[in-house]
Image (tube, rainbow, N blue to C red; front, side):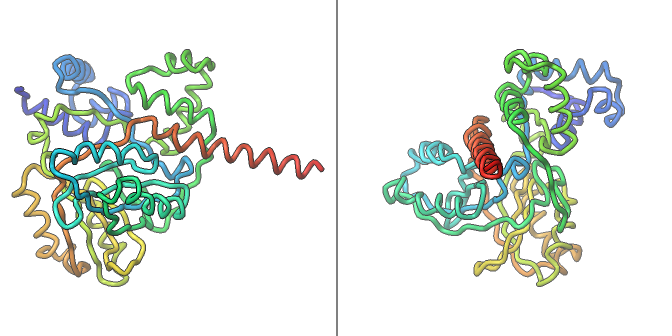
Length: 341
């Protein structure tokens, strides 16, 4: 599949920044004409370079305030690993499932309303897999610094967004069908199109929707510089974790970055890295020790190669978000009746 230098530049920009902005704004950033960008996008879609699109959401803004990275070990034979990963993704708390190298061969990105929900989930893992899976370590995120190659928040900042049931319904429809227009979504939901547009604009402004990412044909991942992926746990010098996080977040290769709560394991940062190949992955990880921007605040790092990855289907929002909204609504109604008495 041949792509030109201009194609590569456009695709790389779209991967890093998404396509939520208008074509005119994207074209301006790329310093090309809007007509050229429009032609290229249609060509990418028609030729299978762009397979689909996917919305990336800040789940903390829809009531899922706890994020954790769970490392465990599957004792299955090689042929059953993919099946096990799919089964793990059936749990509503599991958003991403990674097959990784190292002592623990599975890394899960897990969301919950609170810590108790995640702890309950990890306790159920062994029984759900009849002893073929062993829970290893759980790292709770203190702050999400970077996600989907976008800066999520600065250390110490607070988020506040009132996510309602109308938002949930609209977002669910758009995530299930990313190419669906707002007018089509309004028709499917039997809402007025102005209602849908105003709620969508509010979600964009409130950063509930982080990004709309093009899904690139896997055959082109090497050319796009995302062929090699890894998970890295880091331990910083005491008091320097936020400064180190800031330096790491500025790296384009750092796709995701979380500050972790202090644990007995010692690590207080976790990063997902994406590079072109193993040599590039090796270079950036060794730079952490040789470059003073990182080495002055870094004590130790432990990296694993991501061998395979999969994420939960878009119904995730309905599975957990709707449950949360319904529970909140019932609680509010109950309180209202109590006050009325």
